[in-house]
Length: 247
Image (cartoon, rainbow, N blue to C red; front, side, top):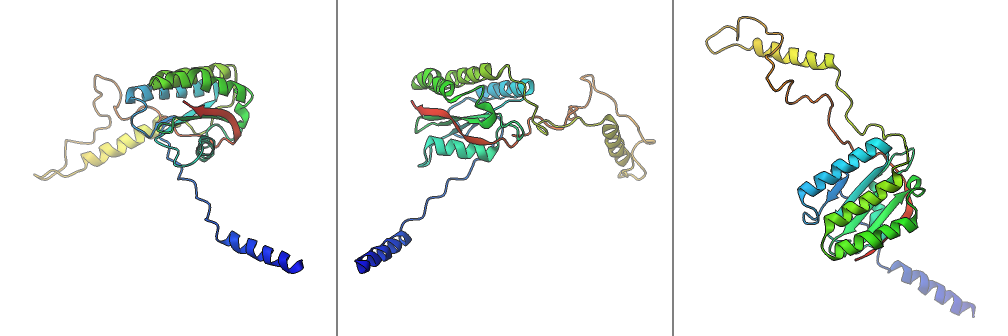
């Protein structure tokens, strides 16, 4: 009896060593904006631009970050696992409020999943996320009306979070450039330019020019007053809340 038990134990352990190693998840794609279409076919550029502007404005007013990730395929993973990995990898939402929402779509697999951060589960519970998937996204996607379905889904999520007032994600927008720094940089550039020798000898111009002529358009074309626009996500956490399905 004992001998048979030992043989079974040895065979079990030996068998485990020959099990295939668990396949690692695919790399997380690098986000470029709130809306990321990696298929090149789901959204037209102008449609993605409109949604990006809408989501950035919504974040500015509520502090809630909504991200969209559209991939060609799931790559063998489930829509839940893939969307959760991306939501966590990107850190959608703020680290303090965990108020991010990720809308994930795998085009060829016809898969959808809305992942909600810990802090977003209050205004977007699983039952509401499921209704958005079933009643909005699936019907439109089945007709090939991807932009309309995604836009209406985003509007539904926005309406749920419109009354929320989370702290804004720090470091998302470029900080304003101090005017004294702009003046100093311009002065240094102009000083160097006026001190550059000409081919015929001597220096360019009759002397240093402090201020350049201002164009009729006003201001400098490359200086917008802030260093960049949307800067990324804020490190929000996700626990697997949300809902999904396939159309």
